[in-house]
Length: 525
Image 1: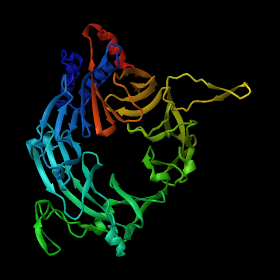
Image 2: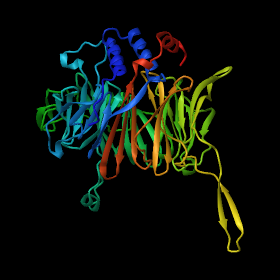
Image 3: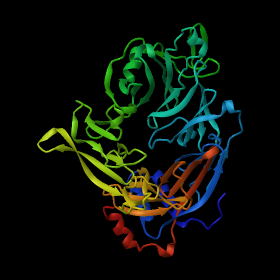
Image 4: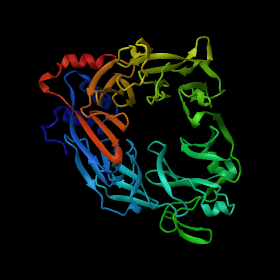
């Protein structure tokens, strides 16, 4: 546990102000978040490390809650100092929680049970139970037994906060089966549920006999995406598949007769039969070939980003229109950088249709515009660029030949050389409309990192927060910026996980005058 300290006045103020959201979700919320944004970015505000802990199991974070020991223990980071919310009873490794999602009640919905209005953790256990757990008490509110014919392992949102997908582990061909010439044609299963109240859409079998030699499959926003080792990606409508290939509609908690056996759907040992079996090739919506199956859709109107399917094209991104596959003008984006780690690109999560392209020493925010006098075609242009704070210099390597002659060789450092400030993480805080950027510099034997807040509209640097802990670039790192909280999770060798919590602290004597705060609030950034 971290050291005790006096209450965080600024944090308490912001949390109390944000509490009005429950009474008036609209203007009040936007005003309160605007005030919080001013408080976060003003010069007198500091972020202090208030809590540090270590664990031998992975640490997860989700909206003010820190989870330890495979989600068995939950710590709230909202209070002035993190405190334990609950700790569930210990269980065998065979029953541990393997994956989880946080569900939050949508504002304005009428729900059947009072407990449904509070946040829930939707959890998947190692022995194939789907649980709904109270996010504040750890009490199990609902439980559904999935199946015994496969091992479900991964949880994800198909439609955020509405529909979940549970993905099984891939089936492997056993040594005996391979020797006997028996091929395993079912690659995996996908179980799909609507949440709160839980209702089953169905469990679909992904079979190689139908789709060919696929390597993976997933579901996102109602689209079944299948991937091939060749780099090919194919998209299908899951609704069309459900309508065409569902063998029998199943309802949770209802009696069912399946394959000569009778049981209750969602209860052990009967579970949920695979009721969607694709027997023929479904209608293809779209296909594209991309290096390492990397494929993204976004923008206004819809565009997609791929890398041409050749190894030498790694780091080259093509931005094309989804409707006709035409390349946008200036749609080939490539950073002129020489680095060990490749740059990355993705559609901006703020729904602006922009694109974020991140390299070791620069972040480009790109926008999609109609070409003048030609509304059917679009072009890519720079909205703004964020540059790393570094000096451009050349190093001289001096060698002496056997004859005593001095030879100087000039070379350039790599763009992600650890001795230069390098961008490692770029994220977006949607409620405060800020870009958060983690930059790291290796100083002597240790790395030092800082978290910068940039105006999402113009890229202006508004705040920089130093992280006190050393940052080793060879370790795995996650950094979360959530309103007035910064959280850093680090994975060290030998499965040692560390968690560092920073909270916003304001000195009331140093705060800006009300008029100055109002002026900042009403400005563009």
